[in-house]
Length: 134
Image 1: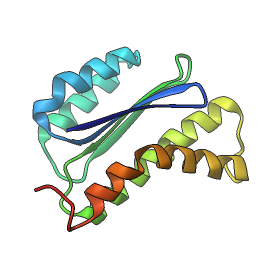
Image 2: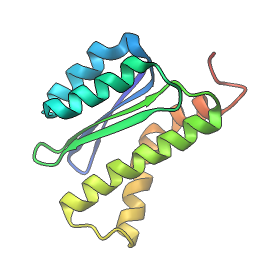
Image 3: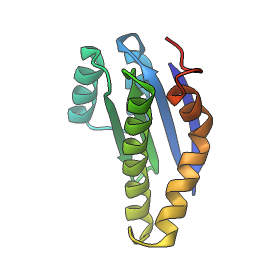
């Protein structure tokens, strides 16, 4: 599992890339750090334990300005890219909503780009069929 911690506009985001069921404890600790409710912890726990490919999750706590994002093992590089973009959109929406950023403007697009830039090296490595680890 690859872990990336970033701070975007005073908002702490922890990304867990290529997780599997053996990473459960670290992911649950992060959800507790973000003060996730029991229902979210249970749902994420079930999904991570299932060990399915092409799964992701995102939990944000606007009050604490914290987000935990997971992108599980994927079947292909393009699935990794797709799942990562999907979760980045959720992070972008959560920050934008909290900060009053309109979802159809330039600020929203720049925010998505700022988040993407923070994880671009992981995305490039994991979506490239030549670089991808088995």
